[in-house]
Image (cartoon, rainbow over all chains, first blue to last red; front, side):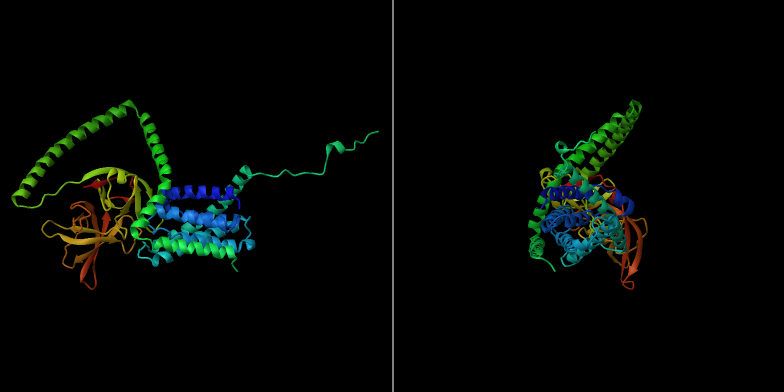
Length: 182
Length: 270
């Protein structure tokens, strides 16, 4: 397991949850609060093993619930299930293609709140839902999809910058060079 | 087909989720506040940056503008002092009359200013986080107001922060009064049934069918239930309709406070 990658995703998830709670421009503009954690789970599921996306889903879900009125733990399972499905089919996914990344991000951002709502309906709390929730769901999914290729781009650059890159060795040796002359 | 590590991870997450959901309310609340504590350094940093930006903007103000603002504040202060003395006189008169008629005295609440540091990151709740907690004496269920009117009540308190559930959330129902002094109708503020996610409108239900409502009437807290003190403005009647084949009335109330633009609020301390 690449711990550097996992820690980087966790740090970004931590900042993303903080940004979701404090940056309200999207809420004022579109009436929607962004959800960036499912798209991070998509990246975690495609870039590492089971432990990678499980840790991201658990920490991201707990941090989200701690700052919201959700019952604690209700976001964990939906995020994990999203990661599990993507990880299960990772060999069939064209993960390098931005369009595939967009579709995966949008699907994950659409599925996670739906699964959370299913869990919430089975607890004693009553979330605020109306026709406007449909708009919020669509807008959230599209934005979540748009953000996913950016995560791939950013994490790959961070990985390239900080990780060890093996030097390509060639069979050419300058001391064995045959110099042609007259 | 899932592999063995997938099954183990799935089992662990399911167990962990249900263990957390089934925790007693108090323990879950405390755990939630403890986990939320990891964001305290970021909230502190954001607050300091905000203060720095605000102080920097003051240094850009011209001397003429500062003198103009000072003169305006001086005039407002004089007017406020006049109103304050008048209010003090009314308070003394009120206390004398209460003693005379043997009515229990009302003890005023001490407002404590708090800054809104975060909003609910999820779309289906209406809550905010403020930068006052148990170290400042904030208690659960304390009323939260602005000079315009009622904001909500404190639903959870940690050492340095508190969570406030806003009016219009299903977890914040308010007993209110509407109408003229002699024929005041009592009702309950609940989330708007037609547009529950609208921060400006809420429903006023449990009104009798004979209640005389007029758009624009002021709605104030009734003081019943012991959470909200009596007389705090909640909003104005926007519209009303007969429900249940004319058996009772329901009204829509436009809230006095713009919940989308909350920056500073006051917690009413007993």
